[in-house]
Amino acid sequence: MENLSHQDVVNLFLQLAAMLLLARIFAEIAQKFKQPAVVGELLAGILLGPTILGTFMPDFHEYLFMSNPSANLALDGFVQIAVVLLLFIAGLEVELHLVWSQGKSAVSISLLGLVIPFLLGFVFPYFFPDFFGLADGDRLLFSLFMGTAMSITALPVVVRILMDMNLFKTKMGMLIVASAMVNDIIGWLIFSVILSFMGKGSSLSLMQTIGITLLFTFFMLTLGKLIINRVLPWINKKLAWPGGVLSLSMAFCFLAAAFTEWLGIHAIFGAFLLGVALGDSEHMSERAKEIVHQFINNIFAPLFFVSIGLKINFFTNFDLLLTLVILVISFAGKIFGSGFGAYKGGFNVKESLAVGFGMNARGAMEIILGLIALENGLIDEKLFVALVVMAIVTSMSSGPLMKWALKANELENGPKPAG
Image (cartoon, rainbow, N blue to C red; front, side, top):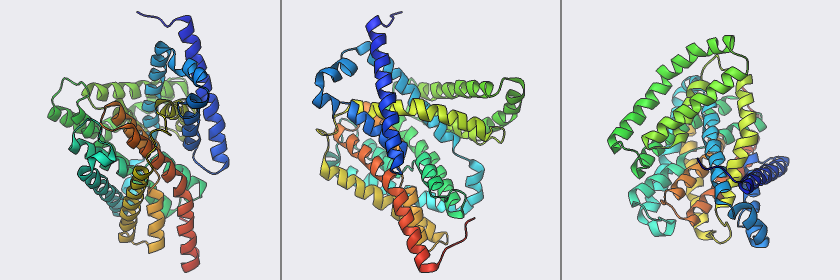
């Protein structure tokens, strides 16, 4: 077994220190301006990567991130773990009973907020693949990817925005969260099928992969959830708290991730489903969830978001027209789709607009999708940069636009009681 050399170890620790340090500084700055931490972490990556550091201090950038392939490989391992854990905590935030309690309204908002952006994201790239940056793959597959990337809402970003606005426990807040949950589950199911089309090295046939994926999803959301609910009280009672539940939940997260990676999909899908099944258990305490969140959000998540900026030069790969088109499609599809769903569910025009703006928040999910597509040669660097910009802009604008719509509604109809 090959070991890291002395210089490799020094290099790896310097990389991790630089990434975590800058991520923390920029996350704090972003939060001072009422922006999600992810925006600051992405900017930290752009600063450390070829865009800024590589341009102005090329020798230092070369020494830190380019001169040592073994250290980079080890760092890539950290980033893979980070993205799996990110999807695990996104799954933990999905509360299935909340989805059922919101009933038809959540399903209406979610489906229209998924179908309309999906159609817009599919149709334009299908007929103009060269403009959108189809790299080396199949046009149908590329269009399916674009439709999915346009339609998934970033649940963690939505939850953070609603909490900041004191809307999380209101009827509208609960409805937006429930809709985003349904949206996430359906979106990731679609994406898992797309990944199986890419053929990521599985020995199974395409139909076997899709069939097992659907069976695994059904199992995790029914029987798997039931088993976890039965076993958790024993874990909480017999093992040290919180160590027992934390280590076992992480272990099963990695097992589920390994299973879906073996299937030829991606490790993130297994981690997400395990998170959904675990987070929905009444025996998974809020305190345990909070410990997991703090650990992952402040150590592993920054490593992933900073690593985005290390992969690509955002200046040389920035295409203004492509980015503007992606922004128009993403805003139009999500706001019209989710807003129309809310209007059908009984909200007035201004409230429906607020729901549409709330559902428009993207973030981690689109970036993860884009990165997988880039690594698999399905999209080019220019489209990837446009998707990252879209994720940042929608995350930054969602809260202020919601506030504007709700303020306009109050001026027109008077304040509405919370609850």
